Image (cartoon, rainbow, N blue to C red; front, side):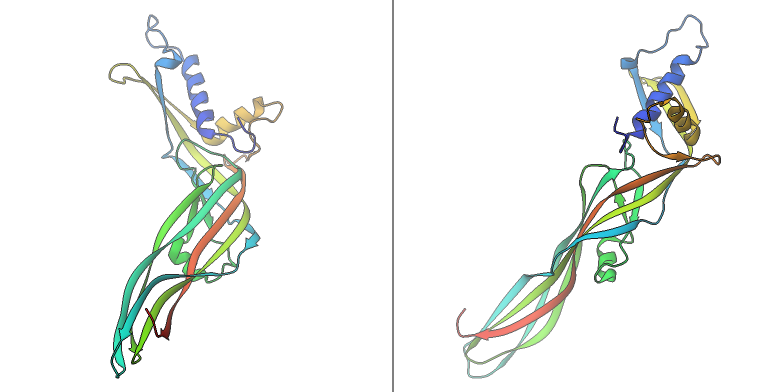
Length: 263
């Protein structure tokens, strides 16, 4: 188990299984399940995970990249100027890539949330692309993709004896950050143990206070190999979390018009 990113789901399952083995059976003749016979599930409904405000350090910001999404050509072979309508609707993909370097993981979405960096270019465009918060899953790179729609509806003049070209161009920005923050966990974890054979008979539900369970584990960890979270007397676990964030999104659109003599 990694000290920097331990799997708390595995830790709680191990605790629940150990508690089950130590609990006397009602029927003295009945035997305990073997581990391979057990289906162990965690219920997180009563656990509240709160992400505090992150601190950001910008590590890279690339120059804006402009690329053409769509172009339309109007060939005017007459001796009169003509008015044309340039109308289109296109989508781009905005991406947010996160990666944990310190924190915790679990068997479902970790529950760690990031607010957007305050110094982003065109913050309103970033929020339109990603919303106000981003979710961090685990230590593996996790990329969230969102579609953003761009549209244009305008009239242009197609000059006589020329080809008029209209282009819809998008300016895209890219920024990389490192972040650090505290995440608080508080509540009750439920460990549901079922017999995996047959119809999945319910055997036992073990419940415990998250802070109490983790404090007991930490007290037994003489060499500090499990985790480095702080646990206070109000039964709140404060876990330091850090990682990286890479954002790429469109910030503006431009319609470019130019004429030439050939298609």
